[in-house]
Length: 220
Image (cartoon, rainbow, N blue to C red; front, top):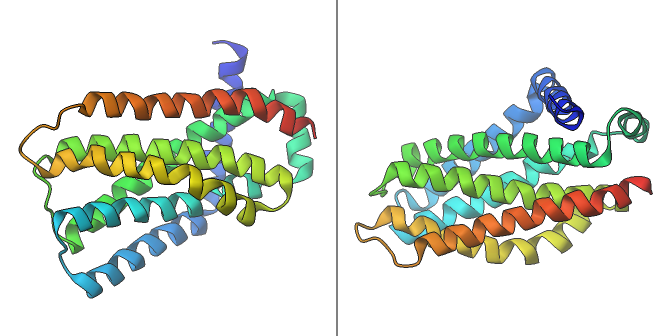
């Protein structure tokens, strides 16, 4: 096993152990998801397909903001200095990207289950939508993890994430809604794989930018 990969795995295990010990943060996000979906159920019971799809991805956006923003907030200045001595900046940011992607995929699947229980199940192709949910949750987490890293170094976490995040994430959300609409129809849309490839390309671009830019932020 290469040394960078060993560092990434060790840092991911560290974040996982912290998440297990501080379970109130995870359950707090689950409570937020459940209460939000329950309020939607009281307001509209079982909406039509387009509304269901749009609401689902908007909920994923706010889940991602709450789940990912804390990933850099919990790292104190002294702890960051310690990580700087034992692992490189690229290993650190890649571990954050991996952990937050896994966390967001889990939260997206939980919210999908609650959506189906409370708001109905209009999906014609559930397995396809589950795959799109995993891809979309990973995409959202990558963007907001990168933004959280920048905002943490700027000492204005919430404001910076809001200012930078929402203009960047709106096109991605529109793309996710269009891709996931295939799961609600019997007819296969043309150009679906091109849209998925575009989304994967955006994810790769975010990873490359994080690997290139984060070392300069860490040195500050």
